[in-house]
Image (cartoon, rainbow, N blue to C red; front, side):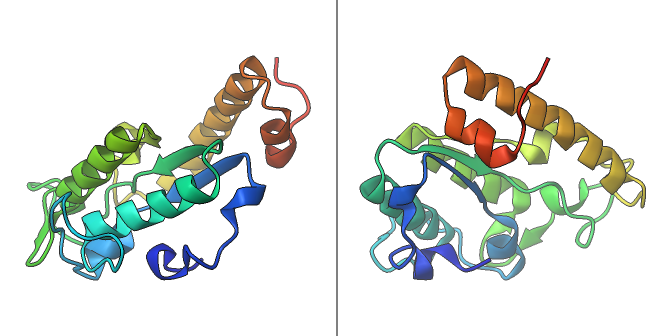
Length: 171
């Protein structure tokens, strides 16, 4: 992995038809300022600026790529069940994980990029977040999601995507 805004200019996105980016939890955890949508993205110092810098770079490099941004799952390392763990835990500079995810969604909507909202649609919730078996359950759910992604790719005739995920046929 690498910090995308600093390295986005040196990474060649032009060779890919399908790009996924998991974004948000490290920016939140390390208390990067949230900022606003209008923050500069040429030298990003805020979460909004970093997201926009990354998306602008990818789109400029490869305007035909299908991009998916994956939002983080809730984080049990911070907060309590009462405030829904990371979703409701606020760091001084950037607010809650929910606010960070809202910023990412706003940027995705602006650029017409799809996002996968793992904060609100993951199997992880406030009652099971500390369950050690949840990772295995999430993996099974992700396998089902992969099947759905392959079906989508087939419907859009994205053979390269099917090849990339290593699946030949899905019934």
